[in-house]
Image (tube, rainbow, N blue to C red):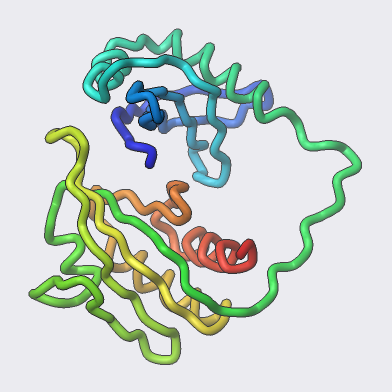
Length: 214
C-alpha cells in the first residue's frame, strides 16, 4: 500500500501552460523491505494527475521523508518533465470515451486528516464503529470501515469508507453530501487511491467511473 510521505505547494507549468500546484511524494514498501518513492503532480483544476517512475529507493519510510523534504523546486521542475514524458500525449486518432453507464455499486474511498472530528462529521455521529452506516435519502449510504494509523507520526490518519449508491444520480447526491461535510477542512479525499478535489462534480465522476471499471 502506498504511503503519502510529503506534500508541497508549488507553481509549475507544462509545455501547454497548464499549471500544476500540488506536489505529492508517495512511497511503497517492496517485498525485500526497501521503500521506493515517486512524485505525483496535480493540476490546479484537479482534473489532471501525472506521476514519475521511481525517483529514489530508501531503506526506511523515514528515509524517504527525509529525502523528500530536502528537494528543491528545480528538482520538481525536472520531475514534472519526466512525469509528462512518461505519460505521453494522447494518440491523435483516439476515439472519444464511451459514455459511463448509469448504474450503481459499492466504491471504497479514503479520507486523510489530522483532525479526528472529520470522520465523525462525515458519518454524522458521535460514535464511530466499523460497519456504521449513514443513509442518504434516495441515494444510498456511506459506510465506515476503519481508521489506519499513519506510518509516520506527523502524517494524517487514514479513514476508510464505502459509498453505496444505486445510480449516477444517487452518486451525485452522495458527492454533494461529501463536499458539504469536507468543506472548510484540511482533509484529503482519495477514491481508488487517487486524490479527488473536494468538489461535488469531481467526486460524482470519480464514484461513477470507479463502478464502470469494475
